[in-house]
Image (tube, rainbow, N blue to C red; front, side, top):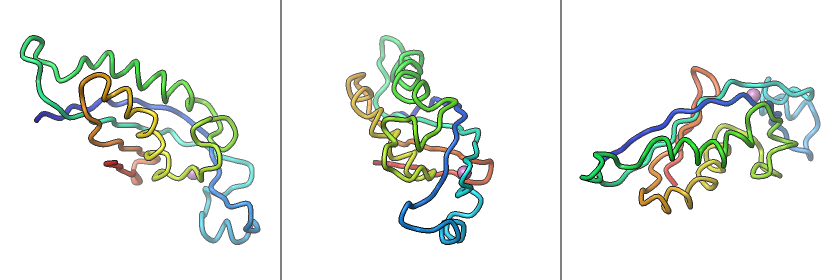
Length: 136
Ligand code: NI
C-alpha cells in the first residue's frame, strides 16, 4: 500500500453563522469568521490517495489526472467564490474547515475510485495554524 498526495490552493470567502442566531450569538460562537460582510481565506487543500503501485508505470495514479479531477470537481467551483452563496456543494452547510473537508471528500470519492485508487484523506488548511483532516 502506498500513499500519494496532491496539493492545490484556492481563495474563497465565507461567513460562519446560523440564521436562527442573532449577530451577537454568532460572534460569540464563530468569532471573526462570523463577520456579516464576509471575509476570505487562502486555503490549501491536500488530497491523499492510497493503493498499489502499477508495476508498468511505477505510479499509484497519474498525478496529472488527479489534479484535473480536483480542478474540475473542487477548485473551479470554490476559487474566488463565496462559499455561502455560490458553491453548489456547500449549499445550506456552515463553511467551517471541517465541513469544507467533508464536502470536498464527497466531490472526489467517485472519481478517485473510478481511477482505481482509494481516497485516504482530504486535508483543508484555512490558516497556517488551523486545518482539518477527513478520512471518510
Ligand atoms: Ni473565516
